[in-house]
Length: 120
Figure 1: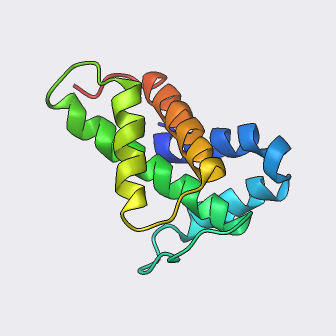
Figure 2 (figure 1 turned 45 degrees about the horizontal axis):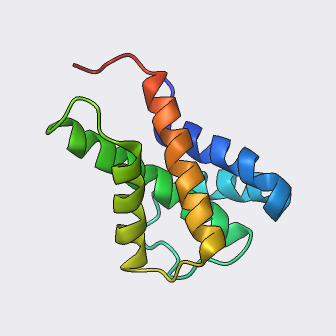
């Protein structure tokens, strides 16, 4: 079974690489490998930090999606995206590029989730 967090983060990095450089893909891979470390970085800077932000957004998108699934069968992608952005704004300063990265990451994570069999 494919991990939707990893799949969403990788797909988002591929979509964002033309704007942010090909190093973003390897930065996301590094962030995926390091995501279980006890203390994530406080700030996100290009491109390594953007990779960390993408992995954080994918993880949060999955969490928000699964929580909303307990209330509704088909959570709105817009609600999930807004929730992820609001929660990440609590601890990070997000500019327009980072918000775009979050939106793309949520889209790709949700796409990866819909490719999975229903866990029910």
